[in-house]
Image 1 (cartoon, one colour):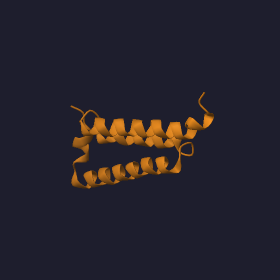
Image 2 (cartoon, one colour):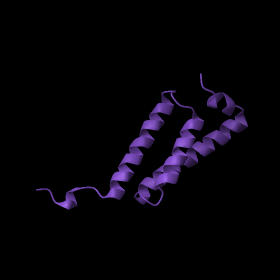
Image 3 (cartoon, one colour):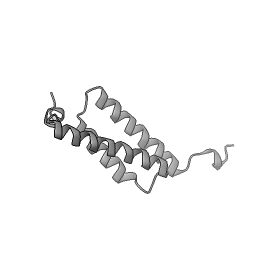
Image 4 (cartoon, one colour):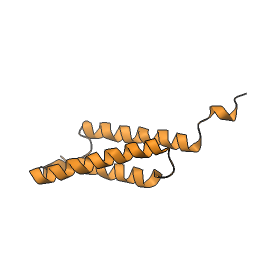
Length: 89
C-alpha cells in the first residue's frame, strides 16, 4: 500500500495545476488564439486566485509573467500597437 508521503500535498498539487494552466494559456497566446489582453486577464485571475495557496516559487513565476505582460502592454501602448493587438479577428 502507498504511504501518504508519496502523494503531493494540496499546495503542491494546486501549484502544479496552476502552472499547467499558465503554460496552456501562454501557448494559446503564442498560437494567436487569445490576445495579449486576454492572456493578461487570465494571468491576473490565476495569481489572485492562488496567491498564498501555492508554493512561493509557483506564485513568483505567475507574478513574473504578469509583470512581463504589463511591461509588454505598456510598451505597445507607447508604440501605438496595443489597440491592434487586443482586437480579435
